[in-house]
Image 1 (spheres, rainbow, N blue to C red):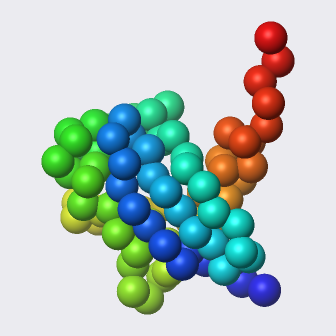
Image 2 (image 1 turned 90 degrees about the vertical axis):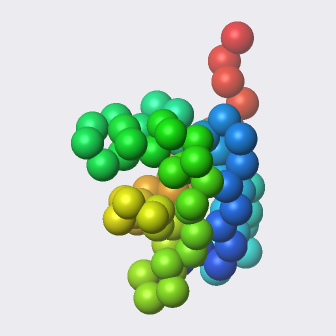
Length: 86
């Protein structure tokens, strides 16, 4: 199965709610990923809020042309769900 997103919803605090064709869904926090020319621009909350599902690539894309691979987003979802050590 080729992994892709089925739902993309921007949330405050540089977070996204994502659904995947694997049946899993949840929130990912992208704060630490927003660096460099393309992704750093997404620190503008108005631009970040333009996130949507790309109709062809079926992953998250933004109005400035930035996009992230669904595999990367899925891995982030898994990592961020793990309980943090005290």
